[in-house]
Length: 420
Ligand code: P1T
Image 1: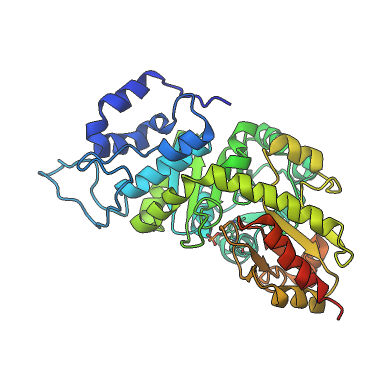
Image 2 (image 1 turned 120 degrees about the vertical axis):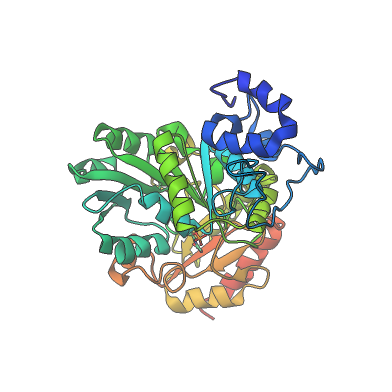
């Protein structure tokens, strides 16, 4: 699929001004569209967007500009950078890269996925109403219900997989619809185009947490979504060695406000962590292909396994929204959840794995297993967990990129211990 550049002539400007990269890079934040490569594929964009060789040394890998401030030539005379909370060349290179990967004009990198979501919610105010997918990452639910609700924002949690629920929840003061798709951990899929149409008809913005898919497998802006948020901690970084988050979007007014919040509240991604995420995105296309391949294989193995009561994977034909996932996503990814019926059985699986690691988080090269009810979703009310299917017997796997057969053999031997 071609990647469009709204202002093709600026491609030339970018190349001819390469020697002035930091200044140009700074301007690109304001101009936005410079960060979109012209007619390039995803892997090429991932490797090159925002990655012009360093103007001073020619370094092919963007240097880690480990500085808090920048020397100025005179009052009001500087090279586009004044203070590193506001802007940093390494972070800016990543922001341009992430924006390009989602097909957006503007990108902002934050200290964590939660910081990115928190900054995005600063687009609404006290008295506003926000509709949220009833299954999200537990930390998102906690931030909305236990923190932001104290500041007069009204949150309403609905099953966004049925667009009529969104439609009937909309009120005069609805300003945002926040969806996660597929959801963490029970993999509910929301129709991004349908929800965007309904929300836009009443003037509300749509935000999508695209962490589980990464832009390689799903690009929500193409379906009308206004803002994409990520925990870059996951597939974008891909190596389980940094916490980070991102907000990408096209609306210039909203982008200016996100930049203002980023600078005012200061939850920025450090230069080193920005560099780590850029190192990760360069191999995103390759990694996601392998994640997707092994995710499908693990899901197929679990689906037929006698000790597994239920699996949650949009790639499975038994998944209620398999057809929607097929239309909206380029693949199904590597997040698979399955129910083994009891806490005892789940504990056996989680404590018997040898290659897989029992840990929170996901999206890294190594396979991780976790117990959502007591780990990632412990902050969600027990009755809500029960209703969503986050039972004591639910196990979640983030399938890594080790050899597929080795991953399956490990899960197989762990499942064989259940009931013994
Ligand atoms: O951990 P952090 O970088 O702040 O990202 C938060 C977050 C946001 N959105 C989704 C969909 C997530 O899954 C997460 C973090 N999730 C885990 C740590 C987890 O193990 O599920």
